Length: 148
Image (cartoon, rainbow, N blue to C red):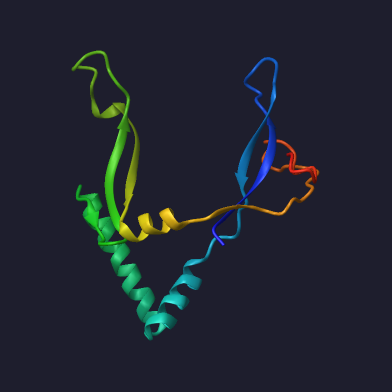
């Protein structure tokens, strides 16, 4: 099925005249839980769920270990993980200190499996649904005429 979207109306509140604009918004669905994923993996490879969970937990443990000591981790067709950071710029070499680091993060670089999935991922428009209130504050729903 791919990603389903709907048309949404929103106001650009940072603009003085607050014009109405339109954009596509992704419909969201509940995330697949870790337990569901473990059960599906164990069923597909014939290993019991406890063993599958143990292997996944060990894999995550080793990923964290190697990234904590500065290594990137390559996981074949899945992709690569690399520890990295953002830092503020400074006007002088003396001002360039470890305190300028603002965000520590893990960068994910998709491998072949994800690149193939993305190149084949479909994006389709969901059927028109009239929504009275948009809970995230970005405007109303579809008015039934494909607007909104």
